Image 1 (tube, rainbow, N blue to C red):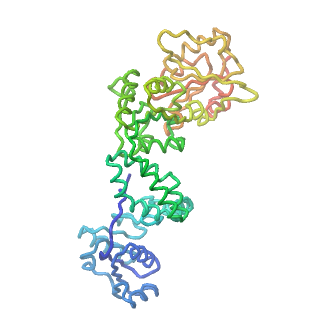
Image 2: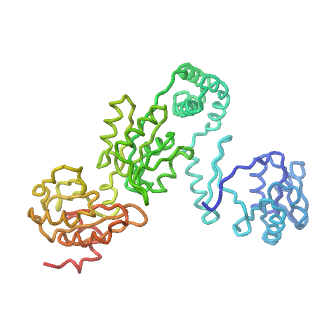
Image 3: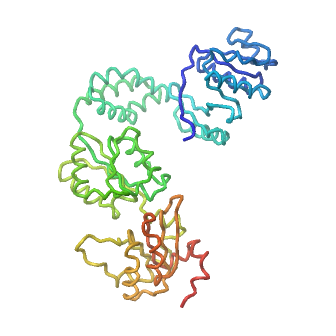
Length: 462
């Protein structure tokens, strides 16, 4: 993050605008809307600026900029190419925030594209790199945010004291407000029916005195790309009081968890072994028993080799509420990112997911059933056993020339796709060990991957 977004109170504070053209007039409108007292310094101001000065709404001095003009100002804006550098030097010397229009190098603050639903205000900035993109995003948000959003904020403000009187504990109040903003009461405000909104709000308050128990959210975070998170996952990530996350959850995903939520890493990380599953189960139950909303954040889908079923069963046996938010499985996401379909009418009529690491004591897979040329086989956590997988499948009758792919760090910026023949799977996997999560894909559908096409001349071995 190159710039920290801040909202500044400029009501009745003096601001300086240097320049008198249309751009300066645009900045003047924005600053006046924020309640600032404006001084404009310009040799030839446009009519809009001159008219405001004539009515006494702003102060206008028709002259060139002087360094002393910045004294006593809360912020300074320059829209005069002839004075921009001098304005920037003077403001910085006086430790006053300065914005020079279209010159990020001369500025120490930027004016974002703004969506105004006062008191709700959204600022969008590209850091000066793509202002048109920021404006396009603003236009899209304008269509998404209700026109009465500000009225909803005002309605909530009028009930804050009453809510605090009924619900003394801070965490319970936060839950109440989360429910309110997704309730019929909020919808009534947005529809302009304040009477109905007040009645619904009072009904909610009457029910709010009852204590709430904890809950555990089992949430699938998908294969790694944050754009693949579901809406439900994002909503629960913003509601949680504490998050327990695995090693496959990257910082781009964690950044979308509520900022003040407690974070506990329970997966294997560098220098630390994974917390045993039994300890994770007890930790979730204990936190939920304290009345907290616990987010169990897992890569992919919690019910596909994610032990989500074990955790759900443990918690429900102890009377703890569990909410499951499915995620895009690693197989779906990673194969799509690699350009490999799971099924294809001419190549694979079925697909099977297996794990390369079975529970201690479990029997081996039915290799004869898996050695099917008309099947796509996806092996999770199979890098260290890749050579054994290939050996067992070939021994069960699958052709040694069957196309295979290894997808590592799938859907992420550092994704790697390696392709080859089944006979070489162990050799292909060995250099990938320890370099990130990977899937093994076995079947004719691999030939549709761009990675296969790039290496096609190498795959003519008999």
